[in-house]
Image (tube, rainbow over all chains, first blue to last red; front, side, top):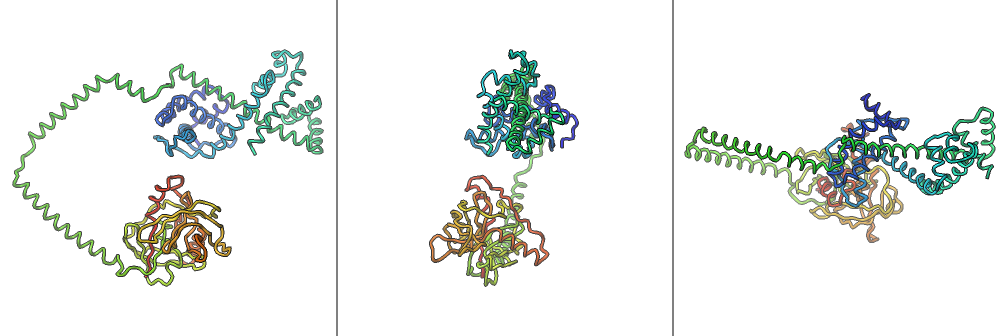
Length: 189
Length: 365
């Protein structure tokens, strides 16, 4: 458990999508990961991708209920990035069993497996959303993601009343569910 | 269609906890009696959870992206290759570097000049004397060395070549080895030889003729304990078709062979052995059978004379069984048998390089 109260506050902020906390973690850790990637055959773009992916892993961890970070944020982000980059290199067949680095690492394999599953689920939902078309997509995003009220949505999308909008929303939702589960069941089982 | 919408709405309100008590009771009653509704609730709960995750992820991704751009704009992080930055600095400080280097050079010259001038001059005669003395020391040292080595070689090498030979391998760095029971049966004394040709005396700790496993201990103070064994001993069963390899001493040179696991049981369905397909010769007995990860899955035991290419190997679990009975029999220090291989995932040639020092030729007299 990271005992530093400042780090705890930062993680709590990250879990709540707090801009300042995210910025602080980002600027304190990005340079280290960037030099790791660049010194191991990567580009600046690779560094950004890998670091943001590692931030996502940290975010998921910070959000989970039995959240426990057994090391400093810095060590954790570095370890995850290193692992992710190693994997990317292997996929690109620039095989190397070692990524040269200078900082301490902790084992993160289990968490990355979970993260990969979540990535997959995200992609399934993204694909389903893309297949839905307008105005269904915007309607569902407004209600379920941006948590707008039905009355507001009815006004924005030009429905005569909230009930009409609600009806339409459920029709869209049924379609999205069909698209989603057609993929999801294939992938998960 | 309208019915579907109404049901879906009810399900969603139920999951989100928006129903009042009567509605909820009625709905739960419905859920218990109608499996289709129940299925819908479960499915919709998963779906809503997925949708929430999707939303959260999308927004944090957006936030990360914005943060990156924001920090680049404010200059708090830099989007450039650090290597280039170093070069830029070199250019910037070129003059300073050059000046520093020339000052350092001048200082070094001045100091070495001073040292040469001030140091006492020794006469060539003295130097010659010293040299002689060194030679005398050298000669006496050589003599001592000769004595030591002749002394060393006397007890270490038995007089006659061994009668029977096999292979053994370390299971604990302190000098415990496993070999086949039949290799050391009827042995008066046992010597083991490493791949550098050094002999060590060993004694038998345990023999199990049933599983064809024997445990030896190196009983020689010239043996240097090994800190860490590169391979592990597998506690579970091996898989059919697993690629395997062995190292052994069918001749005085270490020999490598590879093959595969052909049956999970041995001769006549014997469950303490495996059948393997590997080329093996007399002398390979007692050799470790490794899987691709460098875990010992068995100990080579013998081959069927009536069939070609059928070799049997005692299963690695028998090693653990033997160690357990050894612990019961005596109050030995607890053996640390490695179960994890540290040569996993590396090239075979590298694996062998790491492993071969722990494989010994077993000779009996």
